[in-house]
Image 1 (cartoon, rainbow, N blue to C red):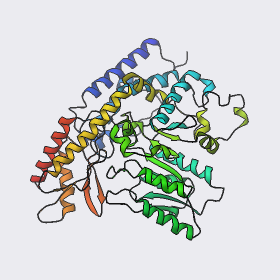
Image 2: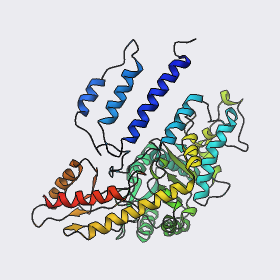
Image 3: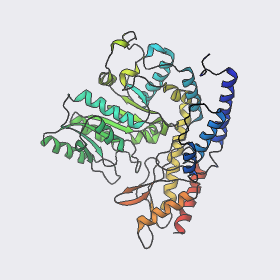
Image 4: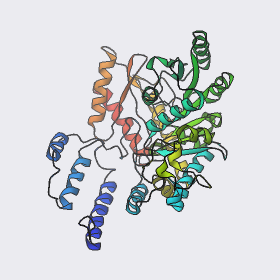
Length: 464
């Protein structure tokens, strides 16, 4: 037996130790600091250059993981309200353990039909959630950034020829930075990425989009792609997808919806109302590691006309000639840049089947309610500006002191809030103003922690 193949007793001991660590760690998240960076640099130094010629005991290695995970931002805890939190469901950790243990390849369906069916069930469910028909296809990716990149590549190869230096992409000034990055990596000049002006909600203005398109056409450019945000990172604004779909249809442009942050609110009644017209999009990005509370590393792209997605990515090779072509199941490698890839489907399929979609819908509805509760409390507190009612779960605000620089005051306010170790928030710049922007997504965040956050914010402002 290879030295890599452990005995059953050794495997059980490792699994037991890892399981006990995981369970204890997760059950301590509620009381753990929202951030714990004290000593983090020392921990990193203690782990530096530790790859040696000889092996080390598993207990010692597990302790390094424990120390690294403890001295960090507690992004899986209830007080983490910075950026866009990722809660991390335990069922997905188990799914990853199972997927990595059986280690089956599902890039070509014929190599593991049953497991490929599980992943395809997830893709079909996603298509159904957004009103796509049977011709739609999709892939699970490592995250929204790769999904957005794949969407841009699909649109480019579907619409443009080999020379696309004059092609233009349109997104709002608050579109996620992965879209510009994806466009550049897909070969487009950065100058051909238009930042369209926004309305009073900081969402893309369809009339400004029309004007930009007309101006580019007059200059001999080729408009071809419009990107709408179903929840911007800065404010959670939902752009008018139906109206933008009208503009795209008028000019025969591809419409992509970036729903990495907000897309899964489509499961709720409020979300479906906000996303009116989303089924008209040519492609949609969503992030299960955000709106479905999964651990980091799961994004998704679905495309309404799946054959266009396949044509954009399918390039054959002689050494793949023995593998079956598409039948009742797709070959995921023909819809993505990836040939070798992990079995991502289980990490989505298992928690959905275990908990049921209704549990996710209820949790998302709760997050919408919590955002509104935070907004109402801050509006009712003297000295605070809360300019935009939350459409989703981002609530940008700032404190306006009676004298002195407001930006400096809010930088200090954020330090005081995060210094509580009970909540952790982040900031952004809006209209040139420094704004604090809590974002509520974690399934572990409930009313008690938001009430505590409100008191922390008020107390910190009073101490400025």
